[in-house]
Amino acid sequence: MRDPGLQPERTALAWQRTALAAAVAAVLLLRSGLVRGAPLEIAAAGCAAAVVVLWFIAVRRPPTTGSARHVLGAATIAVVLAGLLTAVQVVLLP
Image (cartoon, rainbow, N blue to C red):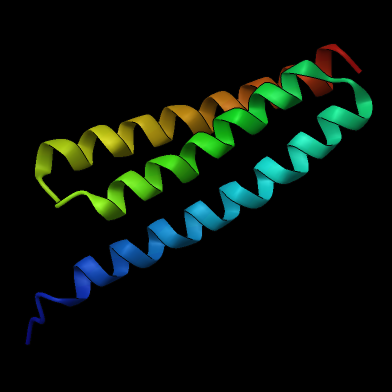
């Protein structure tokens, strides 16, 4: 038997977990960037915070296929950019 209400609930829970992880990462990156004076870590914190903002947009907006795809794409770009900025800061500018 198929329950059509389970898939949206799983998606909403996944967004919540992602937003929580991004919020924790943003706080830790911001603190580390301020303590060490690392501008790339501060920028990475901004990217992680953008994921939290995108989560709020996804939750507040009625779901449509096009808007969900754009929000997911923007969140993916923000996570990848945060990772790249952090990697550059750690590897190239110790």
